[in-house]
Amino acid sequence: MSDLLSGSGDSLASSKIKKILLDLGLSLLSIVIALLVGAIFIVLAGESPAVAYGALYEGALGGTRQILSTFWRSTPLIFTGFALAIPFRAGLFNIGGEGQLLVGGFSAAFVGFYFELPAVIHAPFALLAGVAAGGIWALIPAVLKALKGAHEVIVTIMMNYIATYLTIHYGINYFREGGRQALPDIHESAEIFRLAEITELPLLGNLPFVHMLSYPGLRLHVNFLLALISALLLWFLLWKTTYGYEIRSVGLNPSAAEYGGISSNKNIIISMVIGGALAGLAGAGEALGTHHTFIQGMDAGHGFTGIAVALLGRNHPAGIILAGILFGGLSEGGLEMQFAGVPAEIVEIVQGLIIFFVAALQMLKYFLARRRAKGEDE
Image (cartoon, rainbow, N blue to C red; front, side):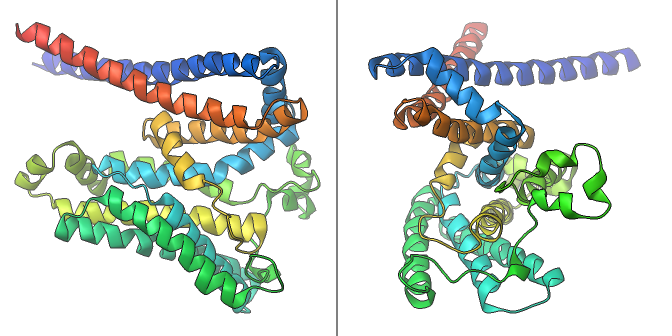
């Protein structure tokens, strides 16, 4: 009996490893194909793919400064990837990361400039304001979905527009200083910790490798560390807690979950609020760590790019970290490509191709699995 249980356990572990390797292989294959097809567009633009991709590599990973800048650009993408992935585990498609990021950034910046508080509480308070705002913004479509059956895709898309124009009209038009499209600058006490500031601390500044953070103008801030911590917490939540089991059960089969005593409505709301809160944290980090204010267009498409990050990362926290760094590297390296004479749109094309081939290969995997299952039934 024990041998039988041991064998079934080994078989289960083996199937999990095979699935992980297959997902990883499909993601890597989609990236390779996207780069190859992207090379065709580079040639059509009259440039050399070797020069273009060489510049992309140098701009993203060519040195310590470039790597740290890639991490900085990846930070909001990781959070918006989480914002999609957690609701997706409950069977929802949260397209509202863009709006949740905006209201989170606006709320954090408002707390940052409107209140005067000691530094020890001002920055955490402003961050929490952004988290709360993003969560509340996601709560609205969650409640409509749970109680009225309103489709979350339609509602969250509409709320992206509402968030955009609310933050512009009631924020920037009422509180802006001078002619710039932004809120007043936040107080210094509300600015979150930039990692370059570690070098100025008495004890930590003398530690090995800390000098690598001492580049002038480096904008990597503490939100990147929070993204890594969030990945660990989300993994623990989803796979090591009852709440995570319930969320995943609802996503796999809502009817079976309800039959087993799991409330679909409760988990719809919980997963959406968690996702919205993480998108709000992305916006708060941009406002308090990057711009030190809320500016029009601060989202820069992070919410929608986060969808691609979540898809490429297979909606797993670790995968999203890696996918976020990849897209952050494409963004940072794209600047170097422009200096090499390659059109900026090429990077956008490569990003789009990655998304396309991720979806295409996933569809191919799905149809092959169905065909195999049909063959076994016959």
